[in-house]
Image 1: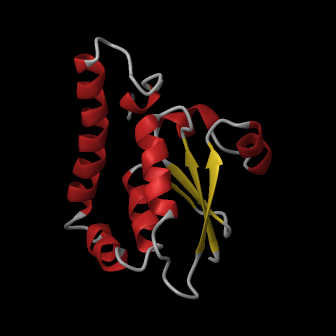
Image 2 (image 1 turned 120 degrees about the vertical axis):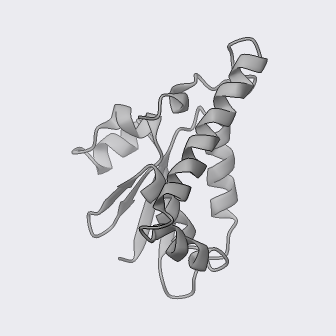
Length: 136
């Protein structure tokens, strides 16, 4: 595996901030490159015709150049794994004992989005349509 492509919801403020944060991280040398494509976009549909593109708008999805697809907590873990600073954390979170922690972290992020939506009267101040709230 030489490249990971993160499919992110470009209309979601939380997703955009995660993408910007990840793009700013130092990557593990000689390991893997990161690319970013808006989920559900024409480019995403052309590059990955076999994916459920509606699902990629609900959960972070990462596609490796070897064909592997990572969704939800697995996607977050592989993103951390690609970084120099957070690789060890990713390895720990990938262990069977820590996977529930990784899942809880992803669910907490989705919950934060829900609470922000409720606080703002049902809409997202950043223009997000709330699709990320429907993690499942």
